[in-house]
Amino acid sequence: MSAVVDFLTQGAGMIVGFLVALVPLIILHELGHMLTAKAVGVWVREFGIGFPPRIVKLFRWQETDFTLNWLPLGGFAAMEGEAAMPAAAESAPEELSPEQQAYEAEARKHSLYAQPPARRLPIFLSGPLMNILIAWVVAVALYLPGLPVIDAMEVHITGVAPNSPAELAGIQPGDVLVSIGGQPVETMDTVVNFTTEHLGVEIPLTVRRNGAEMTVRLTPRTNPPEGEGAMGVALQGQVVAQHYEKLPFSQAVARGSGLFWESVKQLIRLPADLISGVLPWATARPIGIVNISRLSYETLQMSADTGTLLPILSLVMSVSLSLGIFNLLPVPALDGGYILFTLVEMISGKAMTPALQARLNYVAMLLLLLIFAAVTVLDILYPVSLFTP
Image (tube, rainbow, N blue to C red):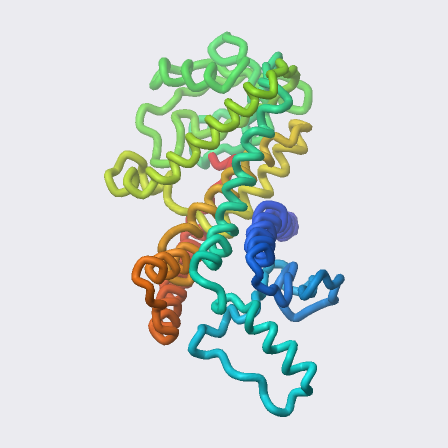
């Protein structure tokens, strides 16, 4: 029964993690598209939070209905004429009233593909750039409280591998490491370094469990199974006491910008590093919604345990930056594909035929769905966790 409860709790937590980490960023992405569209004169029929069916129309601003919908998977900005390429535009039906015909004629003037490519380009760019801007702002926000200085830390055992030296010695998840080899455990590095220096040698390990200390002896393995450490434990450092050394605002901006730029470079280098073997596929493969949701839930737990928003902000920065850069890829059906089509039109002076663009988008969407399905299967088979042994 407890296993069922744990499963349901984790499932609910992953849903919460998805709603916290991804949905707001997708909505802000669409907000970027909408604001830019309005700025260049394109009408936006509807801005939806979630996907239909509709729950309620919240309000109307200018020509735009703001709606709340049942499927909480993100949001959308439905632009006038977005689905109708130039050749597909039709005249107003005769059965419409003169007022309706006049309105529809005006709407066609403000449709997406009635605009020159120079006006369409910033609309397609604005969604990804909104995510990238959010990532930069959050990176700077990470340094606004100052630099954290840890005064005291505890090292918790969050997982124990089956048949490992730790399990055979009686170590349990939830134990707090007090000392190793007689040395006080002040950081995770203390444990890692001492263990590495004493492979194959029996060592004493003192842990605290339910307020009482106990000492066990175990021998770190020289050749542990793949994915396990020498002792077979997963460790998590928990800050017990810390203070912040305040930074001038200019330094906070500089440090945040440096963190942001380093993250951008790592994302751009990732495909080449995977292909060349610099990064192992098992640790750097793409992750999908399932693992992002799991990591988001665990990050919420970590923030609750530490009493700080920094873990959540770090996750938001990473996810937002990944969304922005992914959507800039020159792949049909993504913003980057529309950017590519628009640039080709600007350079050649000819718009791609609606039929060809539709076919390219269709093929790309099928490929993206296949990739999404494959990544989701990998997420389920090989879950990523902050606390995995």
